[in-house]
Figure 1 (cartoon, rainbow, N blue to C red):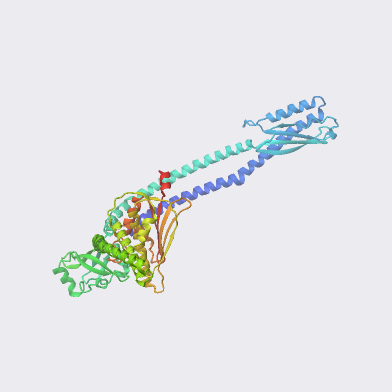
Figure 2: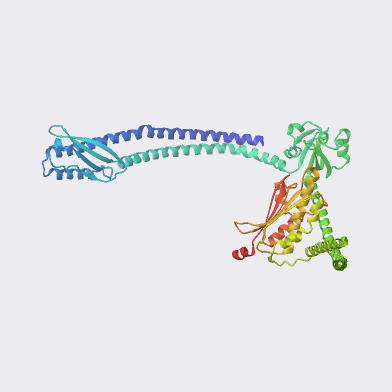
Length: 577
C-alpha cells in the first residue's frame, strides 16, 4: 500500500507542480491586469474624462457668455435658449446619449446693466442622477468682467460606457491568455498522467492482491519455526489492540491463554500430528480481556520441503458468543413470560374461588353488625365487625380489579372517564408502596373530560408504569442507604392544546440515552434474568398506538424517569375528525 501510495503521490506531485505553475501564472496575470486597471487605467480614464468634460463645458460656456454679453434685447433670451438646447442635444460620436443633461444659468444683472431678470434659465432633467457637476464662470466678452456662473450637469453614463468597453476588451484579452495557459496546462498534465499510468497500474495490481488479503475479517499470523511472529495483518492488530512493533519478533505464546500450545517441542509435534482446524483458542487483548478465536494452522515448507513456519488463520468468535448469550437470555425471558402468563390464569381462578368464602364472611359480618346495632352499638366488638366489613370490601375490590385486568380484551374503544381505570390500577399498589416505604403523591385534576380509550388497556398501561417505577426506586434504595424513594402520579389537562396528560414520575435509578432508545424493544430489559421479561414497555407502546395515544419517556441516569401519556379528549377527537 505504501509503495502504491508513493507512486501515486509522485504522479500527483508532478500534476500538482504543473497545476501550481498554471495557478501562479494565472494569478500573476490577473493581478497585473487588475492592478493596471485599478491603479492606472481607471484613474487615468476618470482624470481624462473630467478634463475633457471641463474643457467642453468651458467652450460651451464661452458661447453662452458671448450671446449674453454681445446680443441685445429682445433677441438675447431667445438666442440663449437656442444655444442651451443645442448644448443639451449635443452627443459624442461614439455615444447616443446627451453629453450634458442639465444647464442652469446664474447671472449678475447689475454687471449686465439690464432691468430684465429673465436670463436665469434652467433646462434639462429636474433631478439628474449619475452626473458630474461643473461650474464655469461667465465673463463679458468685451470687458472681461464676471457676469455670472453656468452650472453644467454632464452625463457620467458616457464615461461609464467607455470604461465598460475598455474593461470588456481587457477581460477578453485576459480570457484569451487564460485559454492559452489552460491548453498548455492540459497538454502537459495529460502527458504527465500517461507517463505515470503504466507504473501505477503495475503497482496497483500487486497492491490489490495484498489489500484483498488485508481486508478480510480474519486474523492472519505468520510464525517461524520457533513460534515467533514474523508477519501479522492489520485486522489482527486492530482486534488485539496492539501496534505492529508490539507483536513482530515476539513469541505467539505471549499473547495466548494456552501458552504451551506453540512452545518448544510442542510446536512441531502439534502441527505435524494434530490437525489444527477450527480450534477455539483465547488470546489476550492489550487491555487484558480475552478474545476467543476459531483458529486453524498449516505448516509452510521451504523449496526443499523442510519445515519453514506456520501460517495461522483465526475468526473472531466474540460476536457469535454475544449472540448466543443474548439468545439464552431471550429464551429465559420468554420462559419467565410464560410462567407469568400461567400465574395470571391461576390468579384469576384463585380470585374466583376466594370470592365465595369472602361473600359468606361478608354476610356473617353484616348479620353480626346488625345484631350490635340493635343491642349494643357501643361495644368494642361492634367496631371490630366494621373493620372486618371494610377489609372484606377492600379484598373484594382487589379481586374485582384482578379479574377485570385478566379478562380477555375486547379491543373496544369508547368514551372513558380516565379516573376509573386509574383508581383501579392504584388499588394494586397503594398497600405495596406503604409497605416498602415509598412516598406516593397523587396530583389529579377534577372534572376532566372523557377520552376515547379502552379502560382495561389503559389500566394495564398504568400498572406497567407503576411497576417499573417501584422497581427503579427500590433498586436505588438498596444501593443508597439514606435515599427516600418517591413516586408521583399526575392526571391533568394541558391548557394550550386541551390534551389530557397522564404522568408517572419516580426518583429511581433512571435510564441512559441508549436504554431509553431501546426500552420499547421486545425482551429488552435492564433487570437481571428472572426479574423482568422485557415485554412490559413493548406492550405498553403497542397499547398506546392502538388507542391513538402518544407515549413519551424522559429519563436521566441516576436521577429518575418520567413516563408520560398524551390523550385527546372526546371533544378534541371529534373536532379533529
